[in-house]
Length: 266
Image 1 (tube, one colour):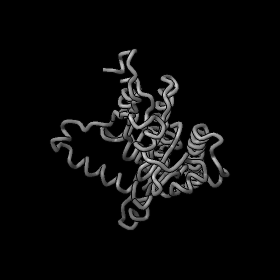
Image 2 (cartoon, one colour):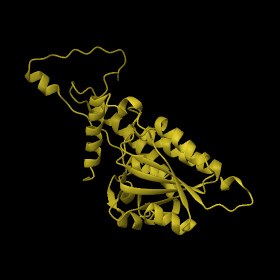
Image 3 (cartoon, helix red, strand yellow):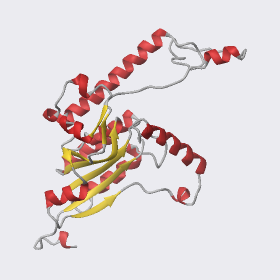
Image 4 (cartoon, helix red, strand yellow):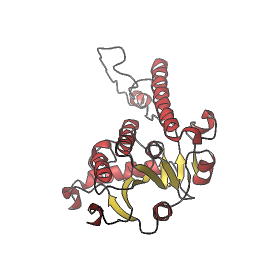
């Protein structure tokens, strides 16, 4: 109440938004612009916060959703004139680092994993298996590239070249975002920073990918004083999922997310 009385001095307040899990558009629990967007809007607008802190624990995922969320963070920060601090927990890699790079400052635990500025496309090929089983697959298309990268057809050199071009363009978009967010703080060649590698926080600090080693509460107290208060915002589990519905879908999503974290030894 005191924040609305002009003659009383109120203590600083930091809005805290938690972003955890793989990034995608797979449903209400996935970290996407649709799910986290309203949370970010509330964090920047409610209670006149002095800063917004983002807790990130994500191995990455959809480049489009990463771009949409990162752009929303910057748009809100610039419009409201509010500084954004990102705090990395276990990992902010690939799309997770894309989100972090949208903040004004990035802080991490000494054991945090940071980086992986790259793009990956993974699939499988089963044409030999079908042939051994005596199965003939018949595909008819209208359009030269309609069967592009079909896993049940032999791999085509022109498909690989086309996919490589798409990945390179997407990678450059990621690089441009990191350079825009980190600017002159980056300390290394493109070949070092943007080859898809990842590091612990100490090395990430040397490379300029983060601003320092620190945790949310003590860092915010250092910046705003001991009396700083926090208001937390995050995704809420839908009612049907809280009572146990969609168990199979939740289990599959958990397995896929676990595999994403496993890429970083977590």
